[in-house]
Length: 591
Ligand code: F6R
Image 1 (spheres, rainbow, N blue to C red):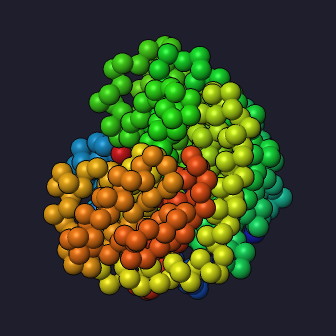
Image 2 (cartoon, rainbow, N blue to C red):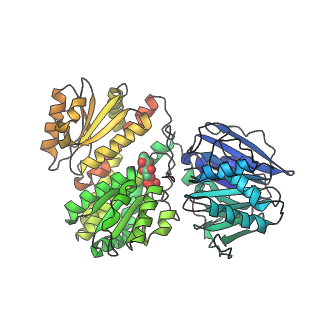
Image 3 (tube, protein in one colour):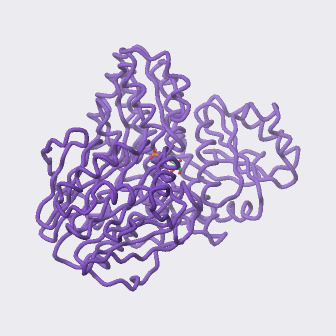
């Protein structure tokens, strides 16, 4: 959930590297931020609640330092609770990602032993535990032993980095939470996402669970946390570039990423089919396939279950990541679990995958971040190749996941060509929605919604998950309460919510759901709702019409785009930052 970046080298760490890296990592958490540098025997810290300030904090520059963006779990959003946290002696600073489940006990014990705590966080215990574990020793090996011992003591899924100002090294260890090492002539780096190391590192290495990394100016070493055995580093060329991380002329990442969707789909059909064929084969061979994901990824997974049923006549189960553990009991060694995740780091999904692995199931991943935890845990991965998603809201990775599942269903059905054709039609369909004329029409629709507290969205069949995803896109960025329903559920209670002027978005593709969904729209209109139809054809029940292309089973790919754009426009109309909605973080690495 948090963003981490650290540097040891010959250059000045603060401005160009740490703060710039933190700004790129802000999508991981933006309640508060902080940096620490080691200089002249003392550690200097600057940290505060709120977004990262535009100017550099008044800290001395130094050749060793690290920084952190926080998404609060334990302790409110205050300056004191922001990371880094320093031990009683001022020798060690610590930044942390995760939740220390046994922190209360540890804190009590440390306080009884005389340690002074200045924050309410669980993270601060690490600084004091390290202080006790290392004592006066000035030997980096002693710090490695200390880190190993402290990691053994804390419970939960955690990653932490220790800055030791005496040995001038950073020490890092992790369990599930991601960490990547980097190196170049400029020095040695560590971060929670390779994105932060663009322009700095030439080569990267992903740290595995249960490894301790020791980062010095001229050398990076890796040890197994449990045994202390040295480990081999597998350096890979850094392939991300500044072009992948910038706004490229767009005002926000959200609209940049929405606009990239046609390219994402083009890449999939031109260069990305082979891995999808492999996925289809795994599904064919399995005795039971289960799609699992959280949030937007869960709606892509639910869409997948409809697509496999309609196109490949195959029953594929669907479960939300956090619910998987209550439903896993049916898994066997012949089951296939397909985990969907943009980040590849979502704790609920990782936990589900761990449980499935324990039962001997095969794991396939649909993942956008190569080298992420899910990617490395999976037996088989389809990389979405959507490029970095930096807006907290997921857009292009959703469309990529649905397109992969649609293609896989067609491949299973022996109709790959038809599947590819649908994706090409979807590319055109999205491009039309990105045109200035479509934009003006959507602005009119946004104006009709912006002053309302509630908005309802209905769809049936394939459009039901689209309604759920559309509602999520609108509510999480505009804070207008938007709720998606299966069209048929209206009469079972939902219709009580409809009041005069309530905006209701109705997905009405030209498929077998059309008559039923339009009669649902009529029922809402009769109770005063303002009906906004998303459909290739106008209907008299629509008060406002968002025309979309008729792309058959590709409708979930195209029809979500108006909702993404409405969410964006509504956020701007309400003076909100579309890239960083309140209370959210992009990678939810805590349970
Ligand atoms: C919504 C959104 C979240 C994520 C969810 C899972 O716009 O971004 O709902 O979809 O946190 O994230 P991943 O796909 O990274 O597992």
